[in-house]
Image (tube, rainbow, N blue to C red; front, top):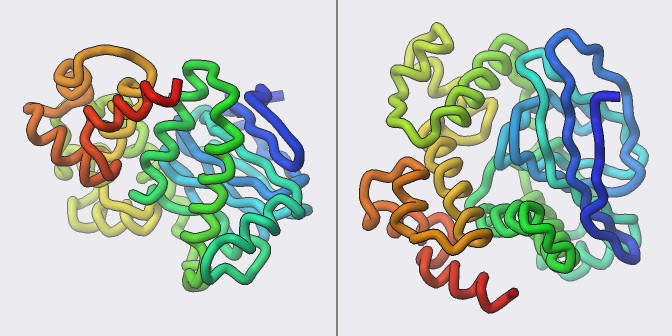
Length: 276
């Protein structure tokens, strides 16, 4: 068995799990079935997700979406392993969520995933910090907010986009892992494109099509997400966190953080402290 799931917290109609997969390229994917609605945030690694809603390559910051009874496969032909924060909801619980989201009418997800979205960035950082600090009490509220945000993001969304080729998925998956391993270092589009053996222009279009954002947006989101997790989980100096994450000066970090998370790093930390 290549997947382990640790129960982080649960309640009536919902469950939060830390899911770690150790599958490698060459391992044959096996078919599984969603027992309820699934909203799973990818926090590490990449994998191919195939279900009757479509096929997508998922990378850190993306959110896997699953419907009850839907069969699915996860493949790792482009890299080894992944880790997800997985929230599961029974139909009655999800029905109440949908009823409270303005404009939402459909019970069920039409697509297989959400790309990394600014609207979810702060929530996912809070959830990952709660996982790292074993704050099980936070997951009921976080799960509800993440599911509501996912429903809102998919309301009125267009139909399923054409699936990217396996070659494009492989290139982007390798680039994502390169960025993950070197996020604190200066990385140019040309360097990342060279690693994928393609031109910067073609790579930019391919990456955006597969990952739902540009390489620079993914690099910036990775840095900010790691900084947000450390702000919530530690009392380190904000400047040290910013420099370790790959930002050259504090003012740039503050500006980028506020744009992505909706508040300054200091306010974010103070609010976290008040939730203890």
